[in-house]
Image (tube, rainbow, N blue to C red; front, top):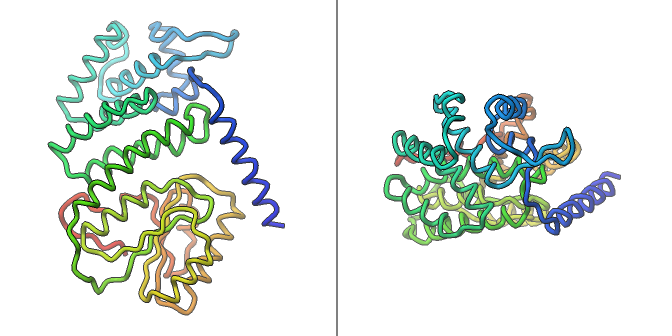
Amino acid sequence: MKLVVYQIKRVLLFDKMDKLINKIKDSFTIQDLEILTGIKAHTIRIWEKRYELLNPTRLNRNVRTYSLLDLQKMLNVSLLYKGGYKISKISKLSDNQIAEETKKFALKDFSNSYEINSLMICMYTFDQNLFHEIYEQQMEKLTFRQIFTHTYIPLLNHLGLLWQTDSLKPAHEHFVSNLIYQKIALNIAKIPVNKKSNNPTNVLFLPYGEIHELGLFFLNYYFQLVGEKVIYLGKSIPFNNLFYLNSQVKNITWITYFMIDKTVEEKDEFISSIVKLLEHTKNKCIIVGNIWDDYKKGNTNNQIIFKSKLEELVSVNEVKLSVI
């Protein structure tokens, strides 16, 4: 019965994805702005009424729609507001002045929020040159792992939320994800061949149906960088393949990463499979993703380790970090 329900859910999921792919979206709801900017919809409405900050199109009395320019403005307003600027002062500035003030603020404090906002605009406008320009600027001051941890991870966390709304088309995510993927691959190619390690082999995989592999691919880069042994399997790996690998490699740390939430039934089934995978071995499994926080609280199996965030496995300093 569970298999039948799972298959039905998969059909519904891919049907929704197909509709998203074929839908041309050139406007945003106020809920989209809330998710993208971190400013509550209620607050945005007050700012509209009191300061005429935005001028949305109204489909009827209750439904507002916003343009890409509105989104860009609100991202800048959000950064200034969270940086201590009063909304009464921001509202008196023109759109160009808000953009310039945002740049000044970012340069003053080198706030990564500016880069994240710029990457979001890059994503929505399919501006590849802007992406590379931001990357080159950051590489002058930061290591790649710092860029990924402080800029790309927050961006990917946003994408995880946006997948559940109509404010993000798969084309947008694929565009920016592929650019990040290229940068990870570029930096992996720069790593010299490491000497053999006596530590467990980190086997990185995403279970069948999970498609967001950028975080896992970055761990592939990171573990190689610090001299750990890695087997990278990638996404949508059938579980029977893991049992086969279990018979071929000894001393394994399995690592998997979730961005999109699952049903309780799907989570229970996954944990049951992991328990069987670890039986009669001294291996461990690290499951990353805040969707598992409730399981983390009640976990009594010392072979299964839950981590809420990818950052918990990565050191942005030059000191080697043990994942256990």
